[in-house]
Structures are given as C-alpha cells and as structure tokens.
Image (cartoon, rainbow, N blue to C red):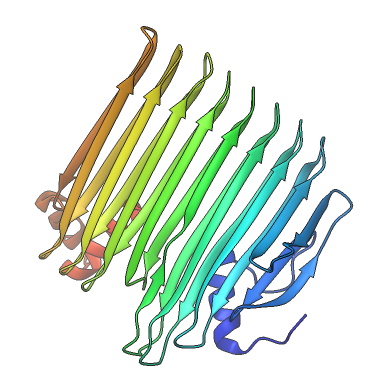
Length: 308
C-alpha cells in the first residue's frame, strides 16, 4: 500500500471513518492511482481491463463482511471518471462503504465522477454508505458527480446512506433503481451547502415487482447564497408502496427547489410524497439561547440534530 500524507489520511477519515487499514476487502484510490487493495475469501476486487474502474464480486451466502472503496484527491487540477460494478450473490448480508474527498489548495478545478452499478441477488441485504467531503483554501473548485444505478432481485433489501455535509462546490447526484418482487429500498440523504455552492440530487425509482417498496427521505440545509434542487420520482408498475420525503432548512440567501413526481401505472400502486421547506423556528433558537448558547451556537446545534 502506498504511503499517504497527513492531508490524505484526514480525508480518508472524513469519507470512510478509517484511521488505519481495515480488515476484509478494500480498494483505496489516491490521485487517480491505486493506493492499496485487499481481497477476502468471499469478496474479490479486480480492475477493469480498460482501466476505467473495478469489479467487486461478492460470493453467494456471504454475511457479516464489508467492502471499503474510498477515493482521495489532493492534487489540484485532477479530473477523473471511474466505473465500479458490484455483483452481489444470493443470500448475502454485506456493508459497502464508498465516498470521495477532495482537498484543493490550487487554482485549477478538481473533479471526481464515480459511476457505481449494483446487481443485488435474491434475498440479499446490502447497506451502502457514500460520503462526500471537500476542503482546501485554493481558488479551484471541488466537484463531485456521483451516479448510482441499482438493480434489485426478488426479496432483496438495500439501505443507502448518502451524505454531503461540507466543502463540495458543485455536485450532480443521480440515482436510479429498479426493484423486482418483494424488494425493498431505503434511502437516507443528508446534504448541506454553503457559500455559492450548487447541489442537484435526482432519484428515479421504478417499482416493477409485486410488494416491492421504496422509502426515499432527504434532509438538507442551504446556507449563504447556495442553491439546491431535489428531484424525486417514483414509478409504480405493480402492487407496490412508494414514499418520498424532502425536508429542508433554508437560511440567509439560500435557494431550494423541490420537484416531487409520482407515476402510478397499476391500480394497487400506493405512492406518497411529503415536502417541507422553511427557516429555523424562532422558539427553538430562543429555547437554546436561554440555556447559554449564542445564536450561532444554537443554529449549529439545531442543524446538527436535523442532519443526524
């Protein structure tokens, strides 16, 4: 494994909560190059022949194992696109931790575009954690454009935790999922923008199988002059249940656009959407300030609790 400097180690901790090399399967990518890889008895990671990314093969009946595939960019001006495919066998129960951190102290933009495609076998359970983080005091932007595509077989379950809290100047997050019978998808997105950052999030979920279900919930905070657009779409093609919810706090001169979309193509498709955008309630601030917090400290406490 290549030696990483302190900045790269800090970013790795932010996006993957790793202080040291983890047990099990992992693939570390630093500044466009492989920094370390390890397979387990049940999980194999191989590079694509054209060098554009990796394939992760998880054997059937693999349980209580994890895969870590973080990406770190610390060179200003670096732009890359990678394609990572996950093939999850039947009857698995695994955790997959991804994420990208960019530290840009230069004048050129740095960008990482990652396309993750999941093929989840029957009766398998996958928890997927994707965290994005930006830092650095350079003039160059920190740009992250993740694409996630999910194909879920019968009786499978996927839980997605999508997090972007700090430092990303521009992001276009696109997620697409197709579910067969009795498959279940749960998404929890947490997003905060500040300065003049822009964040676009798009979810398109198609419920094709009987008794399939999706629960997509996004919580976001837009500070300063930042802009967010959330586009949630669920299509029900069978007797199914779909629920989307976007709950946002707007501050300063921020702007937020929520675009819900539900399409029912079956008489027993039950689809629901909830949305709320508003500022922090004054009584919440006053209550915390009576306990000795400043107004800024009170705001931070409320935001931290909201985004948990």
